[in-house]
Figure 1: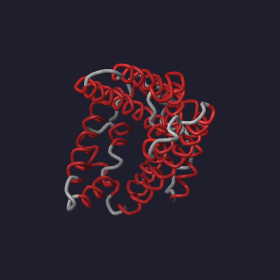
Figure 2: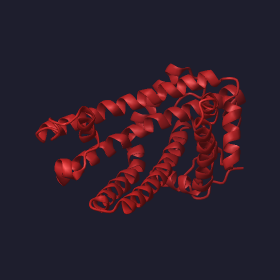
Figure 3: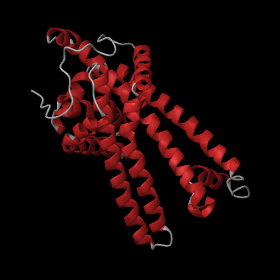
Length: 291
């Protein structure tokens, strides 16, 4: 049995926020945006951790890197990248757990979601490392790329069993395999569709924001430079390019946009996970029996 500790669960007799039934791709998209809109405040409270730490780490690293030696620059970049990724993984864990709880119609707070994410952080990190070791390792050779793609989607739901079912790191990959087995093409298509939609929303908002700031700030400062350098200054400027004031505005805006779009793909993955459990394990009947 799963441990609940002091997390603010409500028992399974509560009615799900959306019907517990098999979902088509369109149903998953509808449910994804419905849950996102209905619980935007909850998701934003979880994302706030990502925004604050991301903004502070970015400015510290950029300040230290300016004028530092190559060795120091590489070391700082690696350290800040690792810390940023760990924080984003914790926030993603909180979003996954919160999405699952609201889908099942249970009350959950941002604090309880992050607590669950922290409590399951070690197995989630271990599972993530195993996942990328295999997928990236297979991608090194041309012959291994098809296998890397296959396992990327076969194990693509590994984080949900770890957080929701509290499985171990190894069992997280095994559970994802069990759920995806026999429906790999469908899962692949849905996951790609969700990822493309989330990416396009983020890209449009990010591009609109940086173009607006550039126009208000008098351009990118790169009108006479090469095309790729212009793109670099537009999307990845440094304080030397645009000044610290505009650089801070750009980083804050891009982090906020990334944070607001992060739950979209997370909620979609959670709905896909429950759809597979309903189809393969009659999860909807299980929930009705426990009422």
